Length: 70
Image (tube, rainbow, N blue to C red):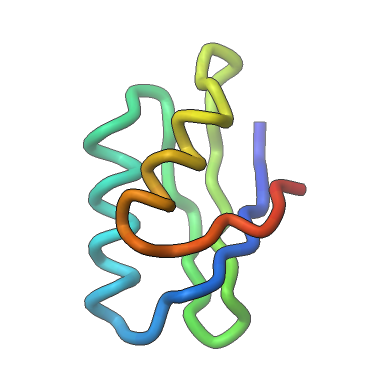
């Protein structure tokens, strides 16, 4: 299922790359479809076994804030 993550704290393309790598490598069942630095969001496709708290923890471990999941 597709989810839009509103993320605060990404400042550069390096941040985007780190987020993409962490989401896809650290959590099985997550595919990053898009990360938009300017508008501060990521669109991911996750399977039903993925716990949203795991995604939140990954985002926050990178130093970003996960504001909401839509």
